[in-house]
Image 1 (cartoon, rainbow, N blue to C red):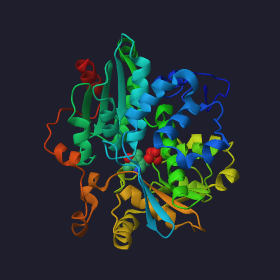
Image 2: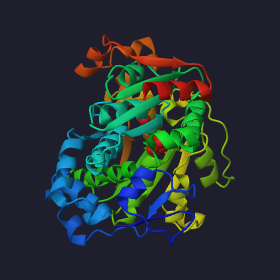
Image 3: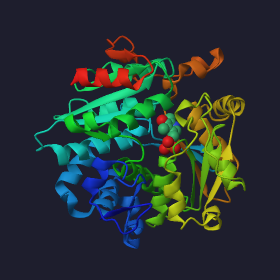
Image 4: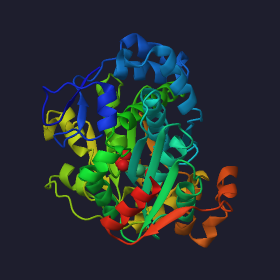
Length: 432
Ligand SMILES: *Cc1c(COP(=O)(O)O)cnc(C)c1O
């Protein structure tokens, strides 16, 4: 499988090149030259396939023979080693729990797959690879845990001081070894700017082999297609043959992957792009202009994105034709008050606690009549990652997995810097 870019459909790069470049040299995003098509026999037998079988089949369609099958199978066994339950709540509504990986957010799918694939290609390179990544919270933890102790690869994570939850900060800063946490006295956007600047810095480019791990990387997108197929299998086993997905969206990587899965042949009746008040996409889908703007801080902070970078991918899958897009996608946005109300409503109705992001996905499902289809809200994080947003009467309903409790007494190692690129560069060079 080869990749071209959104700006230039004549470019051809391998999967390996696409993942180490991250962003294409023409500053646009890599796309598969053609979305691979899965055979109808795959869907006919999907109910009998294990999650591992499904992942391998889908990954092979994407990657072809660039990674031999036995290695790909090992990568998948190692990366996707946690359960993905489909929890049917009632009223033709279900949640797909994507938060049972080590960082307790769905970003584990992308980060764990990416780290193992990069390590596969990089393992015989003499030079150390430096991964730089800016995070508003969840990406950092998933990338840190995904790359921890991977030989020959170092990770530098930039996070904004005081703007990530305590648990998120511990996930980023407690590992040590090849994972270095830099605490920037600024915003997520500042962190992102420093990363971009580092990639353009001639001195750093001379002395370091740098790559990024952000959500536009195709090696994060591919594993996010896997669970859409799994959800479909589980829905079929539960007696539904039609599905609707509601994705709580920020940078729109999750939804882009779902739409790619449908383009590969997965029968999906409808997608719902559910956002918080950062409603650039819902505004556009509901007849407005596409107007990126600085992000607004909300209680679903992993979705506080004002310029969703994967959106052009989604548009391109419909030939940039909004009418065709609207046949399968609707957009809805919800504010913090609605999110808090939804958390209580889901708890009261189904005795089930959702995180604020998953609450928005659930609200999305409620905007769409089921007509006999199963409406699946993608639950993207474990509620215990965000204890501060729950009112006192709910806090006792949070049951934390064991690992989360252990983390709270771990030791932190972080490098605090003031809000300047020069300060970042000094620390990065000193860390060597
Ligand atoms: C990153 C994240 C999202 C948003 O996903 P995108 O792919 O950026 O749209 C939603 N929920 C949680 C918990 C996240 O960490």
